[in-house]
Length: 510
Image 1 (cartoon, helix red, strand yellow):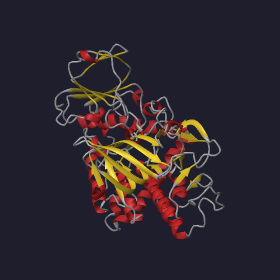
Image 2 (cartoon, rainbow, N blue to C red; image 1 turned 90 degrees about the vertical axis):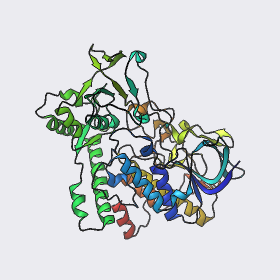
Image 3 (cartoon, rainbow, N blue to C red; image 1 turned 135 degrees about the vertical axis):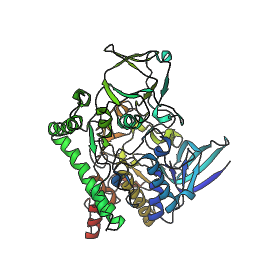
Image 4 (cartoon, helix red, strand yellow; image 1 turned 120 degrees about the vertical axis):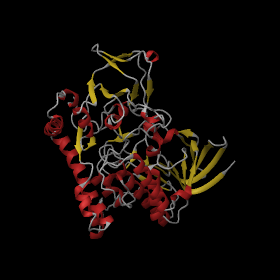
């Protein structure tokens, strides 16, 4: 039985885990660490998903790491490019030498007596169980189940004579040339698949129960492309990063404060895209307010282009049942199909499905708050990297990783061995950490997500400007953190503390 001890164990070698490891290498050079990855490659989501046209749904200037510039002028990058970017970061900072592939973590137990985490890990290549121990545990496995997607069962599936495919498990050699394809769904995956499959398919139909807000953006950032000709790459990256952070926040805040005005704007942009066609706006007019669910973006209006050209169509209806030839709708219409793609969403799962325990007693994640959206209430020496739902995931992942590094360095400086967040005021409310969105995959997972708090530091703001101040600059000790089992001590220093101008400039640059 293999056994290894390190200072920090990271679960997951996707964009969050690799980012965390890079920050550790840069900011805590004396720390030993290991990354445990169940798959046999770096990349996480961007290695798992291989469906046609897979791309980011956030701009790459905010989706990239804050320490490694994205130099491609494309606003939304394709999956292979993102996978390469994450691999390049791992190689550049030597993280690839610290990854153990093919390792499935099944059990993580904190021992209060030994002040150490012990992980039971299955080596899936040979079936052996390995033991890893660490002083600090970092969950960076994302928030969904890699083994299965969300896949409702439809009446009559066995009658369908064609092929049914889920995007999470796309067949490597799926031949859809000359075939009629129906894509069930209206989220980011569906609106990516539709224009990407029309190059070969006879026709592609997007079948949705309800519409989603969709906005077209340029595929190439002309400002960034111009800057790259005469400015250093990191400066160009930071300038565009700050600009896009501001734009993201401005749109989100506007949607919250003036939803009717933002709704009119978004629908007006869609009308312009559909001008000259006979496509009914009902297919792009959601019943909910903007940003109650995530806003979808398409580069250069590619979705609208294939709809105007007649290569694809959109149908808004409910499914009655599958038939031998396709799908029968509640309205009585039947859509013929050779291939049906169920772009029906994710199955939410925390910590990669790892059973987390304290002194062999399982932790009920549903009853746990998150401290500053990073540490786990009542759980010693543990953190979870969880990105934004209303902005680029990596914006939060970056500053959360920075915070963990600050915390580890502070503990070393003060001689502390343990840290544990304590909610002494009973701040827990029924809302989850993702409660601001009404998306189906979030609502289906209310029993699997950490709770929201009624006030700081237990509230999850989904606000980069708010978080960067508290994670990057706030005092490390306050009245909610217990070090070495001692009662928390309230700090008299403000959130920003006495911050020099150089740090203020760094904050402004994101």
